[in-house]
Length: 252
Length: 340
Ligand SMILES: Nc1ncnc2c1ncn2[C@@H]1O[C@H](COP(=O)(O)OP(=O)(O)O)[C@@H](O)[C@H]1O
Ligand SMILES: [Mg+2]
Figure: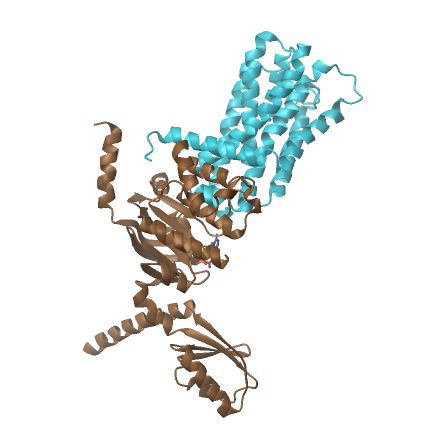
């Protein structure tokens, strides 16, 4: 079985890894709890008792779901496979670490995309979208899901075999981000320091894009947001791959 | 000629040309201060079962991990079917099937899905994957249970499935790290039979074990390794004598022995060590020694409380072989000095 096209066959292998992840991890308790239930309850806590119109909730709902759902799969995979001792077999297969990670990222991405699409369908009857901005919206959703899935992989790089350690770490990182990224409170209502930190959170740009595409006031031009998300993906990917590669020997 | 034809021809020539399927040269792996693997050099010849025999902590797993691309060596080089494990890692990995030590199948997937996953990672087409998986599962008596999640499988069944997973892409070399350790007798026997069977079909095998009998039964050549160093590489027949001379008996008496040297003077005792309240006695001939021990206890007015035969002790085999080598070297050095 000579490799006619190494990149293509590596990509096929990454898809096989992604399939495996979907079967095994989508239904694991930590993924369901942190990826679906937790953002749902956060949303409830925010929305209940407040006088907000349903359609104006769109940036909050989608922002929360994209951010938490797509980044919930990645953190569990590496520690879980370290603990279950399936990793060594995987590494002995002719697929490079980068493509294994790509498979894991795809799994998180698809999880996030599925949930986002279901939520979007809910919003359609309220016709909250500005139709001309639909393409930007879809592009933004795709890039955001991919970006936060990469973040999930980055967060799973410490060489522990205890998934709950990583879950804790990822919550330490992710939880503060939602408060300074305009998910609940628009950024221009934040204190100056908050506004400064917000600039460094990719989630800020996701939410801004969502506000833009639902016709609300937004801060940055859409193209700028897309570019920032793109750069964030590149940064998360590079650091994630570097750390995973460095920590891999400690996992055996 | 199309590229594919060229490759085919090349493979044919290559297949005949490469005789050493694994070549290892001065391979070393350090963890901090300790050298888990220390300057080892060996080759595995096409079609053989090569045993890597050594006690716990000898460096067997570390060696296999380096050769299968799991960890990197600190220094030295190795190649698999002519592919350098460092610079052509993916090509080297395509050639081999691996059962790592203490590894696991995906317990959330069925046996079948485990096989399909590994098959697709090796780029095996769906049609061939299906045929091979069916054949292998039947061979290892797992076919009836192929759709069950492997969570419910016994340790032996999981190990058999791991072997199927290592064979699903029809590898040229099989790497097995203590494949029968901790398994029930039936599973062990089946696994050993299958190793021999696949070897007859042309698969070369690198087999790690701490079980002398297993190495003896399966291997064409055995390397004995301890403390990261290979003491000797030889055919099992030639190693028999070394194994025999370090068979051990453990015995305990009702009272203390006044003069332990008397024990050492019994005929057939190569070496006697105190181990707790027992004595561990090394011998070539356990049967004869037991008779002498009984006589000894009668003469001394002692009762034998317990007596166990232990079989050959690997650490001792290693020590003995290394001593023989060293003795030989010393002799040579001495004669050199004398001749000066
Ligand atoms: N990841 C590691 N970190 C530190 N030391 C290790 C590591 N892996 C193995 N060792 C050490 O290397 C030596 C050889 O181990 P190993 O190759 O597992 O032996 P074997 O498989 O023959 O029992 C042991 O002393 C072990 O403690
Ligand atoms: Mg070992």
